[in-house]
Each structure stands twice: as structure tokens, then as C-alpha cells.
Image (cartoon, rainbow, N blue to C red; front, top):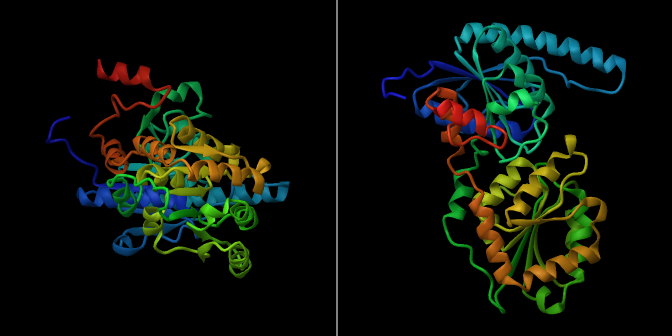
Length: 387
């Protein structure tokens, strides 16, 4: 593309619900604003809008109900809510003068992307997981490009696979900075730090299973170990008592505000496998035992974890088979094998997409159509476009 190419004057972002959808939208907004491209956010009440230096981004809130629910009444309410959201989004898009729309999945993005497509705007979707989400499946036919975070993405209709472009999932710069430093494998007598995180809402199953597994570790490992654990709910005191009983140092909190520092200190992580978590593990270059959330839609967390496992960057344990004895055996085998941890750290970091925000912004601005960066299933289109 030539240097004189005209950038879009305004891009509308459709995102809401969880941080997994909002964070990549925020990263893209920051990148677009740095290029002089205007940004508007359309979200629902849960989205909350951007924070910090992005708090001034023009934000519109619309009605948005879940696309599926139990019972006829709930489904009717959902249809009404989505219809109202569509009308609201259509008006906001017209008033803000957007030229491109980007949807980040989740039902709050549906009215915005549908309204944008009906107004003739160019549409880009961003899929964070290894399985195309229900909202993005519904909207895929209206998109020109579907930006992905994994090489392999399931749930994509054959006719839409040519639209896939691999960009990755943006991560915080403080997390990416960890991976710039070599992973330091622990020596035989060095302290060991285990980080246990369960996503934005924590993982209650970790409250009992992880302390019980740690208690089963050989005493020579427990002497060296410190556990940093996110403990959901009001269980901090109870979990602390379990670690005290087995003589293991610990730092527990419902929420860690200094997560980059915790990642940097950890030799091993126990975590869920949400898209943001997997992206941060890769960017930081940290080996992990991943326990996918079993109720995740379409079991997408298992797919996310498998992508890192196949690259050699971690290990997967299903929640159904998770018990103290099995986890203790896995932890002991890893903590006593620093070379294995270091190798997994390097493999995890090799999968990182550190320029994800830049590459996504390039697609949105039309600077590139992703030639040479097609995700699995999009190679044919990439070669044709390059011809």
C-alpha cells in the first residue's frame, strides 16, 4: 500500500461484557488513536467503558441481551433487547460518522456489527479464542476479515475460512516486558515461586485442591516454596490456614493489582485457560499447568490450552480429573526438573504475538489484508490476494 493511503476517520468498536472482550478493544483503541484515527465505543451496561487515558473516548451504551436462554420468555426478552440495541447502535453509528466497525465477540457486539453492516461499513471481527464464539459465528458472514489469536480456529464455516487472519491477542506492555528477559530456571537450592490464578473471577476449585497438593509435596520442595494465589470469595483465611498447616509460605488475595510482578517472580503457573490468560503466559514466557473452566462456551478453554500444550509451553489437566494426588505428582515432577521448566518457558514465549495491537490496527485501517499471516484455513485466500 502506498504512503498516501487514506486512513479511516472514525472506527466504531463493538465490545462489552467481560474483560476478555474489552481489553483487546482497549488495546486497539490506543493504537488507532496514536495513528490519528478517531474511535467510538459501543458497549452495554456491563462494559463500563475504557479507563485511564482512554476514558475520554466517545462511548455509547445500548441494550443487549444474551442470544440464548432457557425458556420462551427469556428468549423473547433477548430478541426484544437485541432489536432495541440494533436501533440504538444504528443511530450512534450514523451520528459519529464511523467508516469501519470492529466486533470483539460477546452478545453486546451483535447489535453494533449488524447495524454497521446494514449501513455499508467495512466490518472486522476479532476472535480471542480457539473456537469461534457464538456471536462471531452469527456475524462472520457480514465481516470482510476475522482476526484470530490462534493458528487453528474451530467453528468457522467453510465459506468464511478465507477471511481468517492471525494477529494474536494484545497483552499489557508490563506483561510483555517480562518475556524480554530470559527465564531463570531455579537451581537445586533456590527458592521456588508458584503462581495460582483463576481468571477474572478466580477458580474456587483451586482453593482446596492446590493447598492439598502442595501439602503432599516432598518436604525438601515445601521448604523452598512460596505460593502466590488468587483466592475468590471469602476463603482467604481458610486457604491461608491450609498453607500454614503444611509450613508453606504464601501470599493470598482476592485480586492482585501487581500481576506483572507476580508473573515475573513465578517459575510455574497454575491457571485457567481463558484467551487473555494464555496470551499473557505466552508473552511473559511462563510455563503453566492449565485447568480449563469446564463450563466455558463450546469448551473453548480446552482448545486454548491445547494450543499452548502442542507448542510445548504447558500442561493440561481437566477439572473432572483434578485431585490433590495427581496435581502433587505433576508439580513435583516439574519443580524438580528446572530444565523442563526452562524449555517450556521458551516454547510458550515462541507462540507470543507481541505486535498484536499493531497488526490488528493495520487490518482495521486497510494497510494490509494479512497476506502471509493467514490463520489455518485462510492460506488459499492469502496466496490469491498476493498474486
